[in-house]
Image (cartoon, rainbow, N blue to C red; front, side, top):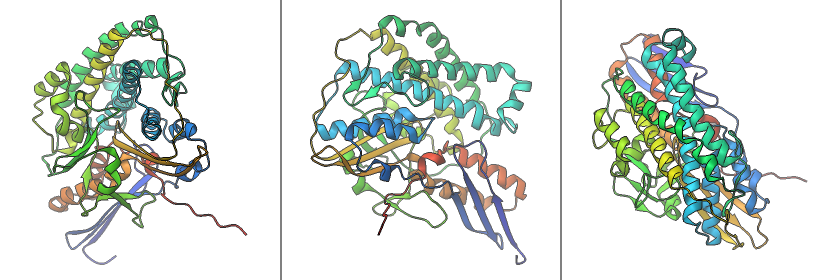
Length: 431
């Protein structure tokens, strides 16, 4: 190594889903490389789907992630129902939104309390937090359990739900079963508001960037299952226009394909983007919590994403209570889905951002092509840009300090590296 050159390696990123690393190279007080290295092996789910019946896509893709399987179920259903010209009934749409609330709660709460909060409180992990603040960790675990209960009831089990099918559900719940959740959801909504107040009081680095935010936008609701693809730079497209707007390419240091706009721009997906583009769709108590936390029209400091996630937890519990109260049992848990060969498109809002699916299905109902773009793969480029912008004026700091800040900056995005590790194309030649 030459004089004046520093290389900072984080060989394994802790407290994120999947396996990744970070490489920084500093020459003569200048940052020349900031690479988020995703080395988790490619998953080849797109290749695995080829030749499978179109009705199998939701259950197969749900196995991509144990944290956000509902997102994969919902995006696959949306794509295949788009292909087949099916629009689910209002009761089915409400149950799917309630199921999505459960996933947002369990994923966001896991990230807030177990993965990200230790960074801001100066602890190496949540276990150490529990020694000094046991009530805080107990509250986080109880909040997560409330989200798990929703997913278990509607999905059949907490991890990799099995009750979702094209056109709806295999079985709709009894009203009494949903009402049995109500008391815990009431407690959880209040606890979620306390969480917003607590995390908004944390100390955050003074750092903001001018992002191009991208998320879905629904005409009535804060987006989860449906909506148009919009951006803070004026993009407004149906989901069928996704491939014209965001295009994937390969970087040699990563097994995850990165995405940029057709003009080469880097976009930001996830809670900050949803909030910036849909603040007017927040539920009343979520909006009040955001106001009390001092969040403006948009949040451009990525370190404050933990606050926005907490606001979305309030929204998810508030929505869950509304949907539980409004639920009435109905006779047809799933609409018939008749095959139409062609191309189907679907996108929903996973906890980490917009999750896009596209499938081509032939006349026999077999999938001939699949494209699945996880939000972490899209956010990989903006994470690297954050690191470059934050580190340039702070290169004088000791290596250990830089390393810690970088890990926190990466965790701002709650990256799911296992989800992001895919390749578009697999060609196998055999003699």
